[in-house]
Length: 327
Ligand SMILES: Cc1ccc(-c2noc([C@H]3C[C@@H](O)CN3)n2)cc1F
Image (tube, rainbow, N blue to C red; front, side, top):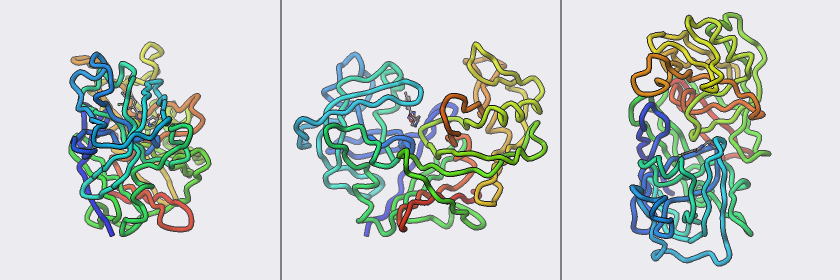
């Protein structure tokens, strides 16, 4: 029965978190993403102009999955594609002897420029893996029957290293009780229902909650437009900036805390997490950590929310569930 833990290292402004993964005989830094289901990495097959500065997977240690290819586009329209090998993957001591490794033969500029990241490790449901003609399993699905308990946990932190555990829940990482809610896997995400929101200009609870996904690969907290608007109506100097494509606020502001009701429990995002980052280096205007989820179809509980809680992604029972606890 395997268990393991791996660090989650924050990148600038907590834009993403990277974890060390051994693939074949390379150690790469991957962005663990509960909002997608492909494990892909830069490789010796990637064009040098796209892979300069990145760690590379060398497929010579793997076995090619003949005729298999993959092509993924993320929420921000960044993309990558390539072919597939089976190879050994080790995450925090947990070993998958034959994991589908998606070697990139092409990536969009966002990935080329993100030189700290050597690829992504998807932790959503394997139903949305993009490998054709036959989708393959995520790392978690590959190892889940060898784990002491079919769970992984997420403990992200603001401006500090957090961790992912596989196969166990670490009671030292949270306080109080864990609140569990059911997960709807129809879209392949860790999708749940939030009961309601309050905080900022939303002084009265805005009651209605809505459908949301827990997404470690998204930096911010995307909420119904009415909730985002209500929140910033209580923040001096905040406004919706069409040029920036979202709400901005003075970097000098200490915004009010934001509360989310889930499973009858209230979880608080400290206001400081919502003063996210300067628009560009040296700017005194910052981009807000809460933004509207307009056009997405559901809310996205990204890192701004996840770094305020301890999150349990549990597929050990008859149906998957999400647990949240105060950190
Ligand atoms: C350069 C770059 C761009 C995007 C992403 C990215 N990773 O996860 C996600 C979110 C959105 C949804 O697609 C699934 N989870 N986005 C990572 C990158 F390193």
